[in-house]
Length: 130
Image 1 (tube, rainbow, N blue to C red):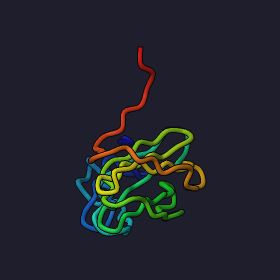
Image 2: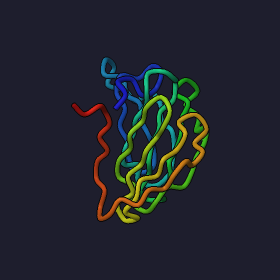
Image 3: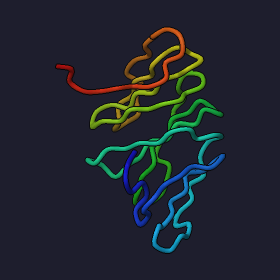
């Protein structure tokens, strides 16, 4: 998860159809970005001012500009997305009911691959194994 998901916010949560930025100091809502039904996970990277959100109520991935709080792009993923991994080049979404991983360019959200992985992919782990 990204520490400051929206510019000016110290904490970010999701409700049934929005991503909400809160200030811990004032205990007040700072921003609210309406997106698809049932946002389930969010993530980002340090190299760009974007965050990514998956909504499993409508099977979509959203790219949000954290400065303007605008949805930049929205694409369809597999059925019942439940986890995402974001790095400088890719956004990877695990799709529980489709039994697949959807791989997108983090810049354009162009679909690069749809990979069948078998029953119920839950989590994505990335890194060098030694």
